[in-house]
Length: 114
Image (cartoon, rainbow, N blue to C red; front, side, top):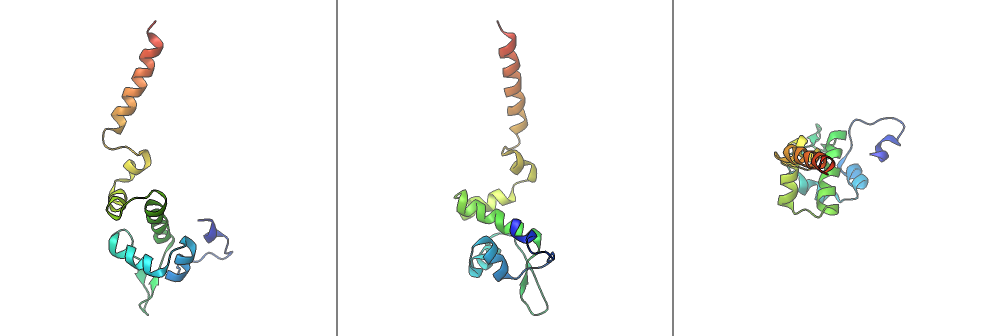
């Protein structure tokens, strides 16, 4: 989020056009993503205009990375967004810890065996 910190005075809310410019997506794409991802729900001001917080912008960047860079389908990106935070960090499911323990033990055994 380097673009946000370059502004001098820290803004709390951003318009859809500002966010679109930051993430290099059109406003209609961001509105569509709101319908597809329950995690993206920017508030609306009294005039009914969308106002994005920094957390919303982080979510938009995450969705964009999944769809554009990682080449996920919409359904795949939805599933990735719905994963528990622990699973996203490690990139493993519930058995991830067991796999790491097994790998560690195999390395120990390799060192012990003549």
